[in-house]
Image (cartoon, rainbow, N blue to C red; front, top):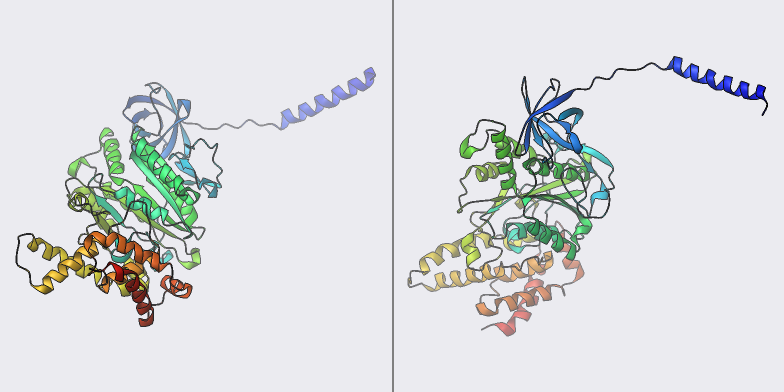
Length: 507
């Protein structure tokens, strides 16, 4: 290249640089940066952020985030969402201009994540469609439809006596270690091939307990349609507080796609305690049992998001199974009464039944479903209609029979029948029963076919009836799943089949 050509190239390059420089106009961006004044257990006090909004996300050093909770004139109380051991007074904190959000999408199915959206299962980064705020408004009344479709749990006593509909909120409560989580996991396992996605949200649980649940879901193949959101008991209280909201936003994404979703909150006792801890540290005034005055609101705005959407909005549903722990069977404590009033019914587990070996230890007398009866399959209604009354009468009479009272023949038969109802309602953990199996057993029970079977042979007799139900004609099996009631001929066919297999066992 000659010297003239080189000079021409350089001249052109410098001319382009000159034009770019003349066209560039620097823009000033305003960024609020504050300072940490104090750090305590799970919270930080920050000064110098006059424009920060309530529940806005703020960023600390080392990618630690927090939510602005107490927005005051001179100081902001921030709930920390992660390990804060490195944080100290004087550190800089900056606004992000957005609220807390979580990744959502079909790529989350089968994954275990934390409330911040980080993968915890070692399967690499998450594949998500978008991010959604964890706090969202519940659907308006006009956007909702009645609950009409049953959510089968696979547990006889629930599907027959305390039915749950898709879009319902059914509280599971009882003392610790008597099978509350087992009922929720059973329900998740029964959603295989039911076109229901499941979200399991573990709030403040022991790592060993959560690992056991995940192992059960994997072993039974339930992780194929389940998302697990986990925050351990050793993590900061801020994560336990946001966990159920994050899980609900993930569930709402699928609901708005027209899918049916089941979400389990395990458990909201730990959620309430985490919020109480944060509130007391932020110097909010304590109320009953030291809980803050808005504890009812944090649970009501969470559970109001569970619903059945109108067909114009896709017709999806979100069914919530919140779990709560009672102390010494006290249903009248603050948090249990709050949640009983928010939900559409409750399943109460009794320690007395648990000690007797009646599992699941569901107290039928104290359990109720305020919606599910309308969503229950007609076949169940025709079979299980008198079962609850007969069981209640048995429990009353059994109390008197313990005193050695001389019983007349009718009372003795009622007690014997009730004992067989109780035995039939027992069910092994993580074993789900199909609709046909349940209806065959319940129909045999209501028709008195088990009354002549010795109590010690009842498990064997029930298994025989369940096995026989698989031999029912396909047309009849499909009718049990439909919205049609059982005809007299259908009932007779099931009773006849059950009678044949029970005949050799009668005493």
